[in-house]
Length: 319
View 1 (spheres, rainbow, N blue to C red):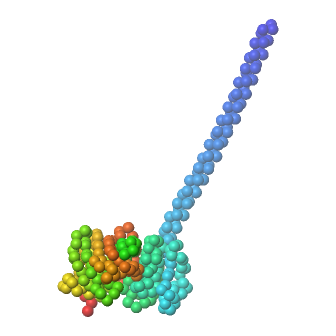
View 2 (cartoon, rainbow, N blue to C red):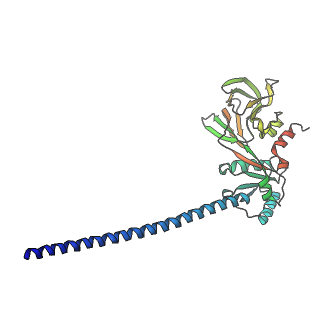
């Protein structure tokens, strides 16, 4: 009888333990289901937020494209300042760093400075003439500016990279969108050796100087030195002497834009030279290397009826 009671007691204990284990399993299962439900809800909310964020991004991108953020810089002349004030009253202007396009008000020289100053931003530049010649600029008008920017034709320019060595051993580098020029610094002529792609082409150029001009720069100093006007799409560079004495009949050369042009001062102590990349000048030059830098670029915007290509083309027939 005693053994039978003990057996029943052991069975009861095992039943109780089994019930406790089953209860614990049920709690764990319920918690797991609950957590998965919360996770699904959270995941769904996250998906909605992501879709919403993407929609907002797309909306901002489209808004930016349809309504470009405009920065405006001026040359400081009275005409340019007045024009900027007029634009500020019509449009919400932002800083160049926050802009989609930079509007430059001034002359050709000022636009060249703007190109250099904001090259790192890679913003397109829409210039409007508040200077004299305005070869690189559009006509100034305050109305329909946004529409003009949208419809503008884009011209991509790559600069020349100049590497110049001086008599004291310094190496100077600078970029030029118009031309690199090497010029005499005294009344005595410059004596220069010219090599192209490692081959000496002129052993002695006796002249006031020599320059390498881009297609854009071919209508500036290069043209006044009787150099050729180069169409923008030609992928050429102009190598042009300034008042040459020897070789007497050499008028320059047209070179591929991939050429590497080197100049050596044959008498640096007696006949000092300067080297200029656009408006930046270096003195007491021993040698200069010039090549196109395809890693740098600037985009200029022009009205379709006032394109830069047509202006460069027209210069070839100007009287």
